[in-house]
Image 1 (tube, rainbow, N blue to C red):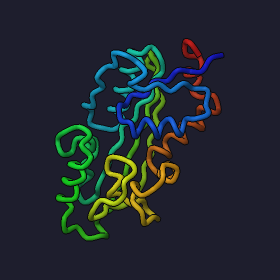
Image 2: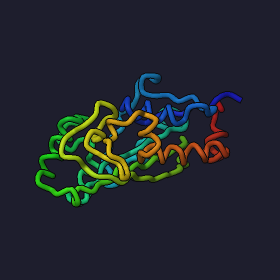
Image 3: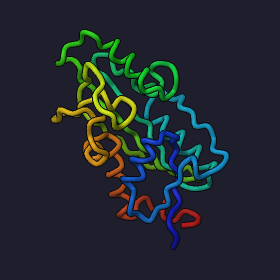
Image 4: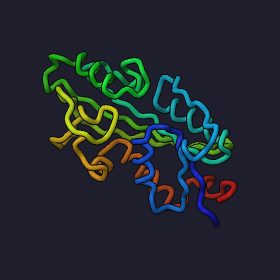
Length: 209
């Protein structure tokens, strides 16, 4: 039996690195955008993380003819009523401009006292088959927003997010330390545990596996 081929529905190199790291050692060939020509544009137009992740994974799976894994993740800040939420990656307008997104977030939180800077990262993973079968996992990481960026690692809002029980930002952690506490790390470990048990059955019986 050959390895299951799995397409990752993201062009974010940071996410690809984290996903490959946490799926390493399984009988799965993880493919990303650079591995397949003609990759479709996967847009996020939903109102929830769940809707966006499902749409992306199903669309890519049907296009690629193989199972696909998508995540939609973002930051929810209590003092901002849950913003930036599903528009976290384009909070300042341009998709994926981390520096601009952080700058807007810190501007909007200027003057907010420490006890009101609570926030959480949310990750929803959806594994989908070309036939429309799906598996959904949701995890969070609770923490707080700093008053200035710290650290050179990670991506997105990592430089301004300190997980509960820690003093360093996500961007000051090693990849291993981050994966141990992050929303995506927790979700991927849950997924990995299912995969190790041979679940979902439809993944392991996919064509070419």
